[in-house]
Amino acid sequence: MRPELFVFDMIGTTIEPSDAIPGAFRSALSRTGLHLSGDEISAVRGKSKREAIADLLASHLEEDEAARLQEPVYAAFQSSLEEHYRSGAVRPIEGAAEAFEWCRSVGAKIALTTGFDSNVADLLIESSGWAGKVDALICNDDVAAGRPAPYLIQEAMRSTGMDSVSKVASIGDTVSDLQAGVNAGVHWNCAVLTGAHDRSRLSGVDGAIILQSVAELPEYRW
Image 1 (tube, rainbow, N blue to C red):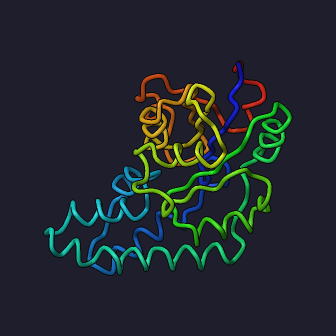
Image 2 (image 1 turned 135 degrees about the vertical axis):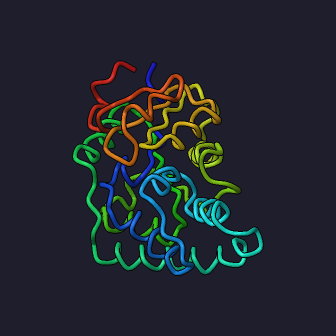
């Protein structure tokens, strides 16, 4: 039995990762006087970017100060990434286009999900040339909460008319992606090694299917 819906993450899974993302976190948060380590930023990768910034602020500042700064810091983060991606700095992961074609050839639907809001996600879709080539794009601002909550996957299912998690494969590159798959109850919960987290970190999630990249999807024994 093969999946009837593949739910793909974007950055690190189907689009090459960029130093612009941790750089945008650092730049936005440095305006508050916070200078974060690479480990702190890595720990929130895969989550809703709005929620990630809220978590980072809350871990370093008093509650009232963290709440006051959340929106301006998030706006600075968004602005930095929009500028970066408008420059055309978007490259699909090698083999991603072929993986999409294979999904189509076996009759499966394709959904993309992301922890970014729609303004950044739309830039990614446009620059990658995938407009019109996927069945659904679900962004952080489409759901009540981002990963590791299951809502991105559930909304992808709703948008594509999928009625059972037993027919769904989720593919991401972070622990949060895998946790979302667990929380959604998908039958195939996959992670790739082309993004933010390495094998040892990803393997800590029970039942995770670890692949080198999405290019391996056609060869996997579903």
